[in-house]
Every structure is written in C-alpha cells, then in structure tokens.
Image (cartoon, rainbow, N blue to C red; front, side):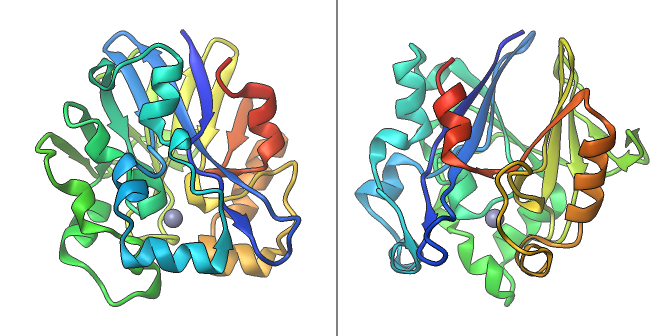
Length: 249
Ligand SMILES: [Zn+2]
C-alpha cells in the first residue's frame, strides 16, 4: 500500500506573515485503483479564475502556480488523469475540489449533506467558497450519510469499495457536511481531519480563531492525536515544511 502526500495549493496568510500553508492532497493505492483525497485548485481555476478566487488572492498571498494543480502533480509522478478512479472530498470549498473537472472519469465520494448544500446554496458566509462549476461534467457521485458506525469512537462511515479501509468521519461545522477521512496504513491509521483542524506541529493560530473558522472539533482531535500515537493526524492546510519532507515520495 502506498500513500503519497502532495501540496496542491499554496496559500499563505498576509497576517501574520509566518502563517504559511500548502493544501494536502493524499494519493492512496487501493485494491480498487488510485484514490485521491481532495484536489486543491484545478487547471480551470488558474486559466479562468472566478470572482471568489480573485478575492481570495487579495486577502491571502499565493503563488497561484498551475504546476500545483493535482493533475500536474500527478503527471510528475507518472500518472494520467484517467488513472485516478476515485476522489474523496472532505468538503466542497473551491480550494478542496476545484480540480474535479480535471478528473472527469473519477467517482466522487462526499457526505450527502455537503453535496446538497453545495447544489442548493446557503446564505452562510463560508459557502461563498462553493464554486458551482466544479460539479459540471461529473455524473458519478456517491453520497454518504451516517448509519451508526464508529471509528475510534467517532461517528464514521465505512467506504466499502476499498482495501485498505477508508472511512469518512463526519466533522460538521466548517461546512455543513464537512468530513475527515481515516485511512488504514501498515502501521496504524492516517486521520486527515481536513478543515476541522490545523497542522498540529506548526500551529500558531489561537483556539478561538480555529473554532471560529474551522468549527468545534479541534480540541477533541488534538487530544485524540496525543493519546493515539499510532494515528497520524493531518489537516488540509499544512505547513510547507511538511511537504518539503514528503512531497512526491
Ligand atoms: Zn474549507
């Protein structure tokens, strides 16, 4: 089983300037083919940015380099878009699923609640980050909701297609149907908490800011990671050093 970590969208804060992040996308080799967790921005976002992407470029500092698009990262690893058979989304904000149009043949896995809000829209400020064109050209959606399963005590949804095991872990708050993704590894688990948490080793944001932007789960996730060394906890926006050590390996 191979698991690769890629930075598919560098996005740094203007203040404090020391708050720098890349967006973690995870490539997993499974019995059912290659699985990609989140896509980062896609080639369309670079070629034809929406007003929200322009707005985001003003309030953050980003290289805005299309070489970071998952499809280009994967080509560098020797893969073609058609090799990606499955895409699991933590949620549908533009920086997590903008690359969907680059993988029109992929089957998409997302929580039903997230998909429905994405399609219907809401008045919540954070949902401005939904960019509707990201669901065009793709017809193969698998929508999930809880049926009472648990993973380490978290509400969890087993995605039955895969060996090794992959679970969606509902962590609502940052968006309506936001989920983490737990991936079984040879040594334990990789628990990707998406935008429900931060880079545990390099975080400089105070708890109140995390709770405001990312929802209520971080204290539980942090305590869980500290008490379970066999579980590797990552967030979507990781410090660049994380990728410098792992990207493309
Ligand atoms: Zn988000």
